[in-house]
Image (cartoon, rainbow, N blue to C red; front, side, top):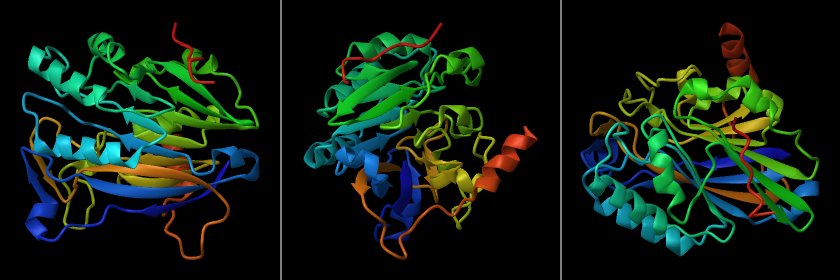
Length: 306
């Protein structure tokens, strides 16, 4: 149902060091922009905008970068905000300060069609009550159906604290996608696309990789902690009849450094029509995913977990 995606990566800032090396603080977060061109039957979604945030890794310190990100987010007035896991960095024993930072961030987010959150491997299941106690809607797992004048946006949150949480029986509980529905999957792990093709997602939003966090000067990741090809550690990629968007995220995992992998959030706008000639699109072919696979109405949210 999404024919094409035009992708504009976050513009680079002046200054080699400031852009490519981040220590301790994320610094200024970049904004990638995507225009997703919809099939005619989804014309009622024309103009709708989503903000995709991932991998905040909130910790002991509240950085100015978070205030700047929240201010810019508020000024843009998104219809939907989606957060794909790793809200905090220390899942085993988040202290009161970290939890206050989490509440401060989530309660600052507003969107008329909802703020939706899934958990990641750094969050742990015990973080769930702190998310549900905020203004956000936790889909862990769960489905939010948002009817919009003849079409429906369906946001499916997958369980992602552990990779093994995604059971075949659980996937079987998700019904078939209706013809007038745009199905968006929220997955912390990009390589979950290897197991979710039967769900026929139009768009999969993921994070986890941090784009490698530490990369070669070319931007090629050294480690991604993911089974997809390294070139799929960030950006937009065609997967069968849908699209995968992998965010480099905002924060740090384990070590407070980013090298040639600057932080980003993604602004996605749905448009009815056809992309202009020469628009930037995915450079990843279906075969890249297939080969790896062979090698190895708001308020009507529902839970499909056991």
